[in-house]
Image (cartoon, rainbow, N blue to C red):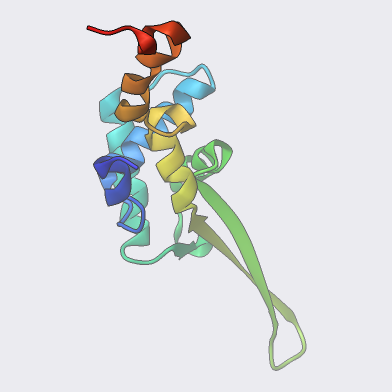
Length: 138
């Protein structure tokens, strides 16, 4: 595991990490978005969450909700709902938006794949050598 990958295992979802995930997620859908646009969306969306992992949908304006739906399509956000019965017997539903940190991290690194292990790449040069090379004396 690389040092960069290790540092994000349990760390916070930063604006830079979210922006990178948005940019990579959009490119996977063959859509283009500038780095600045991805950063602006990440900053805007993360401001709703603060230190929490979820946001109540009632807080959102229609324009904000559109951004949340876009991130849901990328797998970065998810929705949940909770139902409760009020004192008068009516059902009350609360809709939440949740960050999926594991998906943010997957998208942020190499477009959804893990970063390459440099040690594994270095040892691959031995795979192409013939077996008798090890018996040769120098």
